[in-house]
Length: 414
Ligand code: ASP
Image (cartoon, rainbow, N blue to C red):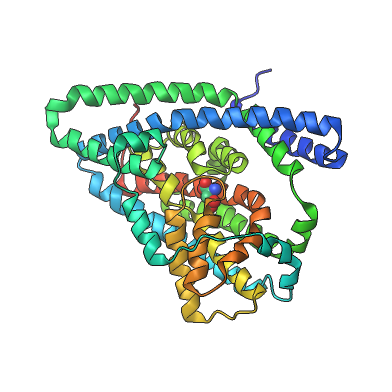
């Protein structure tokens, strides 16, 4: 009997969770746990390395080819507008949900800061205000493309690839060969992605086993209410709000979407990195969700660094949590500042594990909360990062389907 890759990935995730539970039951000193975790670490990191290996050529070619083809068909400006509108509005909804839930359930109220004395003492935060953050962000957009490619700086690669795509179209027939070459490299990289995906059930199994085995249960229990509010609201956004928006805008059934997006969703959950998941997301969008290659090639890589619903929601909820913990009441104006800075912080966060924690410093400082307080959240971040990365990646796929629908692009294949 042949099991489909989609089901293998699902089984891998289930087995990984069970194995992680077994390891944590046996205890960290047990030989089986130690050897098991060692092997999981090896397999998990090879899987992520493979995804990262293919990421840069894939992002560059998919954006350049996508933009070149869309411009030829005069669609580019509509795709731009629809994409940015969707990114901003879905993140705004996510932040409102995060703020709403944090106001309703007030996590952190009644908890004593003394509980976290140790974490706070051993933490030095890097200061970052909004102005500096924006300047830094703008500065990182335009850099030497070879440096960007070598450092896997996705946002700078996206920008350079946009220029190349537009220049190919403006040059017309002159650069026809270059376009064909880029198209062939794109096809070739997608073939390699398909090979890497054969390893994904095992990679996901290994990553989840490690994740579960390494959780600090006592710490989780002390922050249980906050964890429940964040996970619950992120779940609501990912499994009710986004599928509902998709259904209203395109008529696509939520179950159809979740089934076909599963490979990318589980990879995001296990890796906690939108960037590492990008090759899988692109493959899912094109091959399973039937998004036009050019639209997916533009929306998905851009979304992987810019569109982060899960992160935006988290930044807002966590800021209110820290306010409660430190006994500060945030009034409406201050919550509006949290709204705006959480959006900027999510846009600016790169798609790597725990990136949202780093950019959250800016949100806290904007309303005068102590940046050091993120030390309290860092130990549980790996767990929370799973679901918010899943929702970040989901938002990109939903976005590509909606952009396709509203710009009415018929499907084409590479
Ligand atoms: N890990 C998230 C991502 O890659 C970013 C974050 O830390 O919120 O999408």
